[in-house]
Image (cartoon, rainbow, N blue to C red):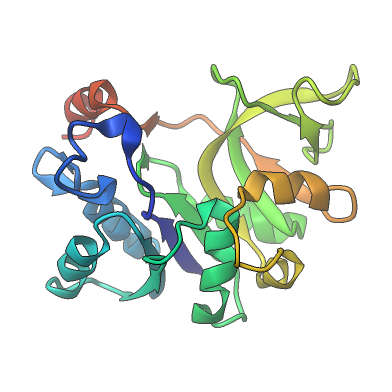
Length: 229
């Protein structure tokens, strides 16, 4: 398994913490969000991780290059245009081997999710994409059928046997996905692609009980400092 950490965003919700740094370099008890997630990913045996950059890209690239990491870390450069999650994955596609699944992880998500279990589940199911999801408060829930397959968005699809779940910013994709995505000459969200692809491919969900936090606001940062010692 390879990995892709989404770290290019503007971090607008994290201001003023991101006035002088990219959100990937916001610290939790002395460790940056990027460091926490890269070390976790490496601990699960990942040997290569791609990190995309845009906002304060020079600072983030310098931070990565000046440190030794327990795996190879490659930069996907989005300085010219912030590509959103979908465009970012298409733009980075050539940086992966194309031979194994790719873990996609938002840099501002912290969790103790067992990535080996997620990977094994993904491979066992034979999904094109497996989304880590849960029944938590969210205005942007996705709908899954009784087999755990994506069927649409909450509010856009009718059906009594569909379960609304929120995507938690961690997923695994097969490299076959790259060729199915639109070109990277414009930004677009990956979830829109997944909803469309679910009509012809299996986009599944993985659910489990674990500690999870979206560290997207200063308040969430303070909460994370109490949880992640």
